[in-house]
Length: 248
Image (tube, rainbow, N blue to C red; front, side, top):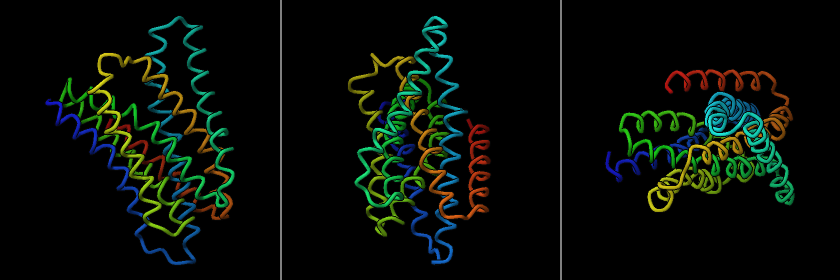
């Protein structure tokens, strides 16, 4: 596949994040707003945990275990996850000045997903250059899970600020990380990127997303006291992950 087509595929996969942001244009009545936010948060946290456990961690384990001794491999794996987890608390510390925790959730999600999308852009670009079928398959899988990731950014920020512009801009930035990763891979990194490097980044991201889901998103979803919609969101996220695995 040509370099231009590979870059376009990476860009489309990344920009699909904006499709998740479309939900802020849905007309939700005042009595249903809390239910909608609860469902979106629960759905998003299920996606984050599901992607980490079924995709990011397993795919990274094999690469690291294959390249290092058993002891060194597990040290690298646990350190990557723990540092990712701790980074949520560090970022959270700097966001304490934000008065609305919904807004903070959206910003935390944006940061996590920018870091997540960057190596995905590299992988999609390199995969597309090497094999057109592989590139398209990677792109489809990434598009599918980028949509709910867009929801996890846009919905909290929109309902915190009531501004569609403020909600869509960080959603766009998150998606932009993917073609940016592809561009860097083309200009600088394609001869230096290794499977181990990408695996460590993805483990770091998994640590961020699991911690963000459990420590921030789930308590916020519970705070609305709409337990039925927590269960619906978690179940919807679970079904989405199963479907994503089938496509992948």
